[in-house]
Image (cartoon, rainbow, N blue to C red; front, side):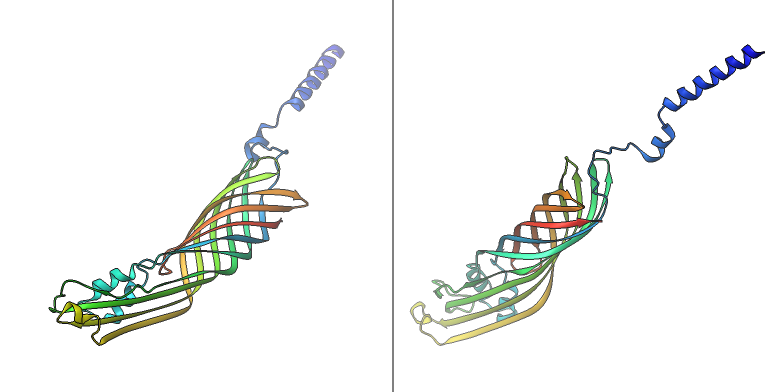
Length: 275
């Protein structure tokens, strides 16, 4: 009997030791694999930033609606005036901006997905004025008269505030988090436009350039117009320690309702804190 009890104790001890050495598969199934060597980017964060970039605006055709308004419906020189105003071209300016950001990251091992709100303040803007020499057209118009037509077309856009709502996707590499992003862009701009069209007409080609002028004009000004568009870019963050991180990124931003075609490229750096 004593031998049987001793054998049972030895067998039970071996079973307990073997079970203690086995991995906890139930914990693995519930929590997933844990990589303790990966920097933790999970959670809320915020920070400040400053940037430098270029604003490229294409004013070609941006005052077409104002020209039609000035001339009124069915004016025989409308198409000609519109073609003259096409002389408005592309303008590029450089500017600095500053602002802040806040967002939230979800992390699965090395993969980080998140959302972020981003704001920049500054003065990104440009202006273009087309005032070609008035032209005398060699053929009479539909009214049987020869016309000399001059057009002055001017527009300025000043963007003072820009914001984006982004989705982000990154991959942890050591202390670094390279990422790409894309989303909606919003802006606030002051826009001013005016056009002046002069039309001289006569029954001879030579007489049209010195005939009395009929002048048409229109202007409009909008303060604080809400702009919208889209944004995309890439960047990287580096964990500096104590939940402080640095950031460097490039952003492309486009507004589609400013009048002229507006494209902004910005390089920016920032510092943030992760909770």
